[in-house]
Structures are given as C-alpha cells and as structure tokens.
Length: 106
Image 1 (cartoon, one colour):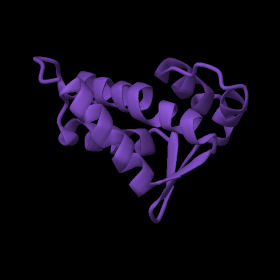
Image 2: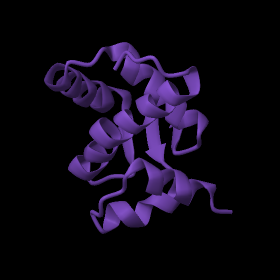
Image 3: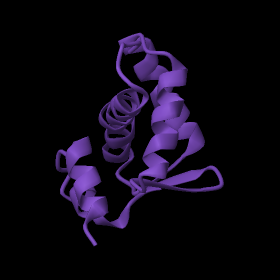
C-alpha cells in the first residue's frame, strides 16, 4: 500500500483497509462487540499474508481507528463504538464510510 499520497490520504487508506479487511470481518466472525489483541493479531496475520500487506500498515490503521473513535481500547481489549452494535446484531455490511458517519452523529 505504498503510494504517492499525502499522509492524511494514506492514513485514511490504512484505516479503511484495517476496518474492511480485519476488524469488521473479525467482529462478525466472533459475533461480539469486543475482541482481544490476540484475536486481532491472528486475523491480521492471516489477512497480511493473503493480501501481501505489511504489519506496519495495519498497526497504523488500528491506531487511527482508535483516534477516530470507531474503536475503543481498554488494556488488551478492543470494542466497537456503541452506535455500530446494531450493524453487528443484524450481521449487516458496515463499511468504513458508514462506521465513521455513525460515530460522528451526535
């Protein structure tokens, strides 16, 4: 995912990738609003291998999702924003644009 984009564009690209390829599929797979660092790492390693992406890209993306408030972190446990829980319960597709929109609604 090395590109000629500016730092904001590549941060968004990393966030989108981590959300679409790792976090949301993991949430649906385990059917829970929370996941452990170990669960994340296992999924991340699998996706990085399949998609030939470096772990650096995914770690930046994960941190960025936390900064945007889409993910919350307590110790080694991550959870999705409460406004995204209905999507999980319905097992609905929740792309990055939907996630960021839901989190920003006050």
